Each structure stands twice: as C-alpha cells, then as structure tokens.
Image 1 (cartoon, one colour):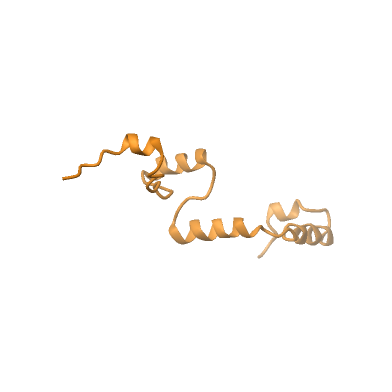
Image 2 (tube, helix red, strand yellow):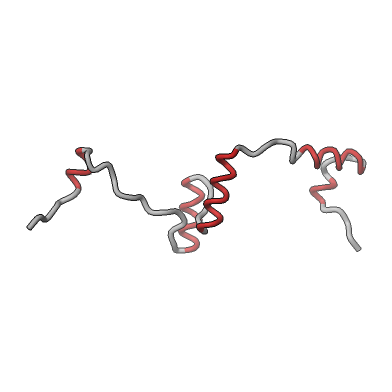
Length: 88
C-alpha cells in the first residue's frame, strides 16, 4: 500500500544508493542567518524570497507580504526634503 515517491526513487538504482543520496541532502548545515530569516518570516506570516517572488505573491494575495519600511535617517537631506514639519 505504501510505495516510495518518484523523486526518492530517482536518487539511485538500488535502495542502498537511494538511502545514501537521501542522507546527503541533509548533511549541509543551514547558516544561522538563513534559519533566523525562515523563523522570522514564518512567525510573522511574511513571504520569504527575492523581491520578484514577493511581488508576485503580494499581487496574488492582494496584501502586503513584507513589513513596511520604517522611518528614515532623519539627519539625511533626502529625509528632510520629503518631510514637512508643521510646528505651531
């Protein structure tokens, strides 16, 4: 009733070859920064991927898929030129 997945069977001609190749898939250590990015995106329900991918997902879902940019460098000329402060 249970049969190996087609992709698993493609890993080798014999069961021993497939098992060895499958183990190899998990030998590489994922960098801590990548793990943190995955955790953060998962915990906050943000999309993880490049800009193009995120734009496509945002369009399909019709919602933001990444946090909005925050503030700015208030000392920069660009920021000062954009912000009009109404002081009374």
